[in-house]
Amino acid sequence: MTLALFDLDNTLLGGDSDHAWGEFLVRRGHVDAEAYRQANDRFYADYQAGTLDIRAFCEFVFAVLARNTPETLRRWHDDFMAECIEPMLLPKAFDLLAQHRASGHTLVIITATNSFVTGPIARRLGVEHLIATTPEQSADGRFTGRLAGTPCFQAGKNARLQAWMAEQGRTLAGAWFYSDSRNDLPLLEAVPNPVAVDADATLTAVAQARGWPLISLRG
Picture 1 (cartoon, rainbow, N blue to C red):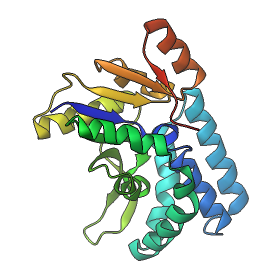
Picture 2 (picture 1 turned 90 degrees about the horizontal axis):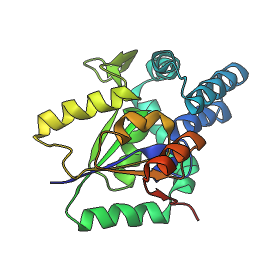
Picture 3 (picture 1 turned 120 degrees about the horizontal axis):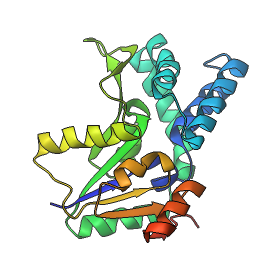
C-alpha cells in the first residue's frame, strides 16, 4: 500500500505543538517561567534556522517528563489538547487526510516532536501510525529523562522511517510526504511525491526550483 507521510507541526497543525507545550507549561506554572520560556524560544528559533541541537533539546524537554508522574502528565496533556491543540486543527488538513485515506493509502505522521506530546494529537487526527522522537520510559512507565533511539529529525527522520518500513514490509514506491520545513528536505528528496505545505522560505525556494507542489492548508 502507498504511504502518505505527513509532518505534524505547521503542516497538519496551524502551529507548533512542541513549542506550544513549553508555553503551556510556563502559563500553568509547572516550570520556572522566565528561564524555561527563554530556552524554549531559543530552541524554536534554532529549529526554524535549521541549526537545532536535537539532543540538547530532548534533554531540556524530557527533564519535565522525568520530574512528574505519568498520571500528572496525562492530566496536563488533556488540558493542553483542549487549550492549545484544538485551536490549531485545520479543516483542510482533515480533508487532505481523508483524500489519502479514500485512495487506500497508509497514513503516517512522522515528526521530530516527541511521542508523549504527539501521540494524542495523532489520535485526534485519526492517524494510526506515528513515528516520533521517543522519550525513554522505565518498566513502571515513568520517563527517565533520556532519549530512546534515534531522534526523528532531519536525516534521522529517514533512518526512523527506513526502520519502520522494514518492520512493516513497506517501501517508498509511490509515497507522498507533506512538510513545511527545511529540516525535512532529506525526506522530501527521498519520496516520489514531495509536497511543500505553508513552507518556510528555504523550502519554498527549493520547491519552486524543483517544481514541487506548494499548497496551503490554512484559511
